[in-house]
Length: 300
Image 1: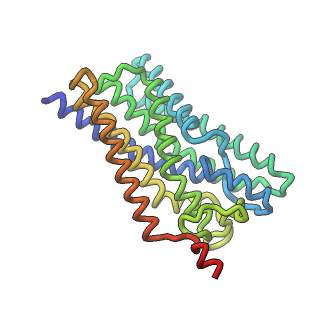
Image 2 (image 1 turned 90 degrees about the horizontal axis):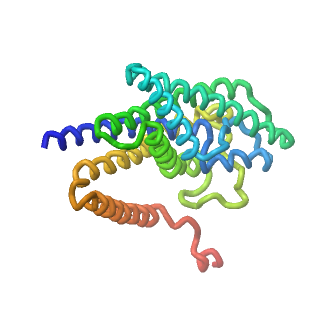
């Protein structure tokens, strides 16, 4: 009983760390315009819409965060093997991983913008200086929190995977959670605020992102301010629930039926969330739709 209570405590702490990591990851991604909505930012100059949005996407969020978390976890693991304090090791590993992320963001922005030079898109040096440091700050929080939860899983719960391998697994999961949950807030609710709710992006509006803020031209800090209030918490709750429920079912049910108990509980959780998601989607469409007029009404 005591071990179960200890395991649930570690599970709760890991879930809290994952919530922080998810919120920071999504905000970093939206400020850097990385993920699905990035395609419209990349397309905008080609359609004649010059903008001041920081665009650092080369890879999607799951492989990018798989790399950064695995790098931070691997370096921390090496420092721990040298008998360095685990907290200091994680801080050092996360710092080095963030340095790589900053190099990645800088070269990605310059390279992508250079490819758009023939469409008149300039490199804004002030955007490069200000946005890179902000994305690095958010990335550090996401990397540090995720590497810490990986260390908890490894050291406190006795997971057999080494720290770098756990970093790859949970880094990919972190990026996927932010991409699937937070991107709609940035791409559909922020970049296309001039479109009707749920209408998608019409072909005629491709690349015509919202480029002006409440005062002056919009930049990525405006997008980060918006998504930090909405998309960030949603992504944090998503990743936090993934980590918490995954560890919760393992701690409580893995001993039942030679591991089959945890698998069955996992399937039940997936089915429950599927029903809830479907209900919310139908409710939203009924309350906020329809998005276009019916054919007979349009013809009349």
